Length: 453
Image 1 (spheres, rainbow, N blue to C red):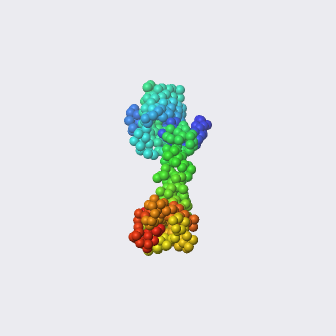
Image 2 (image 1 turned 120 degrees about the horizontal axis):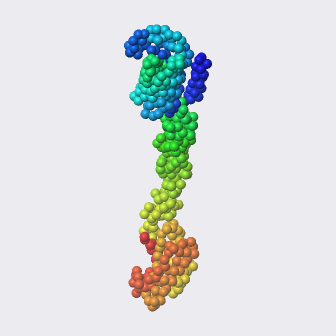
Image 3 (image 1 turned 180 degrees about the vertical axis):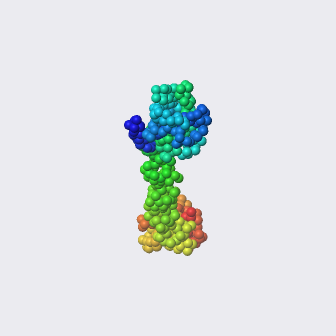
């Protein structure tokens, strides 16, 4: 008998310690082993027995206890807090109520359906249960069927290990087998759950049963430990922030590193996370003047104004000469300059009746060219005029030829042809009376007039 109890105890240890990660709700199997006491006294029978529940706890006088492991139970969870169990027990009967009897052998084989009251009402470690069932009991060679009612209590020391105590009333169907109570005390282990990934969360509750994970995420992993499970983490291998779906923002500028062209330097969202020290809208990395505001068209540098006339070089048609804004940065031709040009022009001499310029007028033309070069963006009309001597047609042709001769000389001496236009007016615009010699001399002239925009 001792060897049997030892075998039962070793079997229980093997089952229990191979399932140390089991959970009650996931592990449908339970094994219990312990001691039992048989009491035939408080069952409502005449002496040597007693009334119902009379001296119910009188273990010294009435209980039959075998000082070895003497009860073994295997049960299977059915669902909705119900379990089905089978119990085998043995004992030795020496007390029959208030009387002593010969050493009688007691064997019991019982089935039971229990209802876990504690689990139903979530009572925690203290876990009461009730049960009903039946079985067959032998005392020596006499045996009979019984109807059993049970109340019990599990005190859970861990998720899979409990101290168990229960009391069962057995009502025999034959008069020759007395009604009696059988009390048991022992330990219980639950087992049978599956944890494929070994993360301590059983498969039926594990949202990621094949990958080790965390209880906080129903068994799913958080590889980078940032509090965001991998399936919802856009950067599962880099610790990040919830605001960026688990991706990092190393420089703390509010732009996730994956979208940040300068992930280690705080910057602006408009510049993909890169800084702009001078605030000109050009990222420092692309800004040739990072500490001076300037337009992107000039690589972040301010446009110069070389001549200081208030017109930037990019808009200044005369960047090396002081001019006016109204004249696109170029100096304007004043009335005094215009008068000087015409004073020079009126002294240009031509061969009589011809368009050729006399040699002695070269200095005059050089002076005119020098003035035109000072006003390099100004355009001029070179106008030829004659007196009334000769036919009108000839005078028109002569005036046009002489104006063109002046233009040709100036172009040959560095003045752009695009700035000059030759016009002839013949005898149509006299400034003096053609009836006098002096008047006719003044009417034979060349004028230089500014073309105004």
